[in-house]
Image 1 (cartoon, helix red, strand yellow):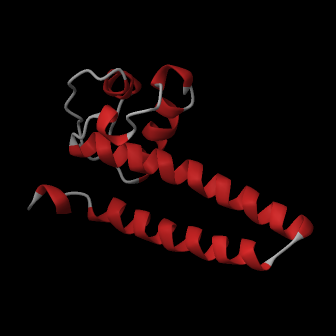
Image 2: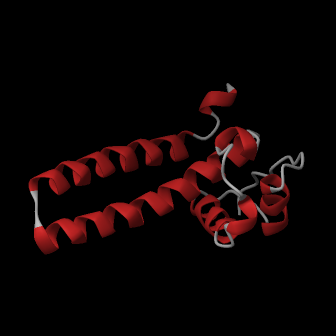
Length: 116
């Protein structure tokens, strides 16, 4: 199995999230007032989970954090390790907070992707 297709379930979820986000965006353009505000909140919430899933996917594939988000400072993102751990666990991949923190700190870490 090639490296690209190692996590097809995560790839499929990311594609679905992208399509849903685009659909919400279209609704935002067609709405106004409170409805528009509520749709923006929904889109932001969707984006947070998608970001955590993308970061988990990058870690599982061995892509360095600095390649994924070169301008972000991981020290200001206290919520990221827990979110990445949660998203990986949804797909039965084990990532510890220590692995995630080391990855965020740009250490060379190999992720363990054992079934839970």
